[in-house]
Length: 248
Image (cartoon, rainbow, N blue to C red; front, top):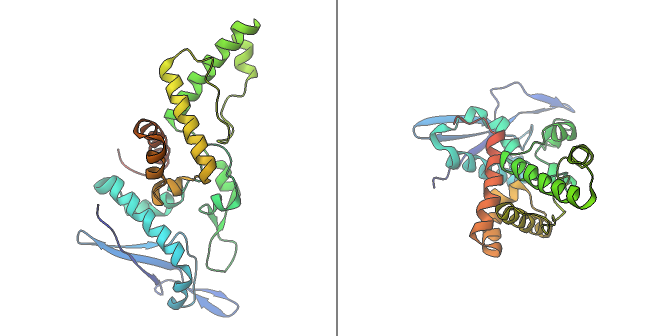
């Protein structure tokens, strides 16, 4: 696995922003890869007055460099760094299901609302860009059908009524799902794997950022085994892939 090591700098070739009489410049990073030079605007650090101030944003730079390397090593020649600005936000998608557990989970959705050097979360953008991935959607549909069949058999309520009455999607990832009524053994296994993910997510306040850049995927595999890991990894991969600007 190749590691890209970019250098951060203030792009003084661009027009500065004047704040309280002080000129501040946008933060960029640059690197050379396979003979090509790349210069990209930082998505985690806003305008600064001096490069010495970069020392205060080491954690942000580490997160951004991890993101850059994830994208490159995942997609290699298929990845265009011109898409990094959009993709940086998307791979830090806070959680695979439901609402974030706290404000920190939303920190990668930005809007420029202050001059502190850090971009602030844009809650409207975050709420509008929650989407489902195909594997999870298929599990949801199959689970819902099994549940509807079970309730219909036990109560006499029509399946049509139940389809329109029951909640149509999993609302948050703090809830483990019962499996006692499922007849499809493969679906039962998937739901049990999903429940392992829920248990793990609750214990670790799991986010996609943690899964990919802080090795929580390896921790999950160690605790729950290879088969459960493969199911959950597929969910994360499809979620990320569906959001990124990558050629297939």
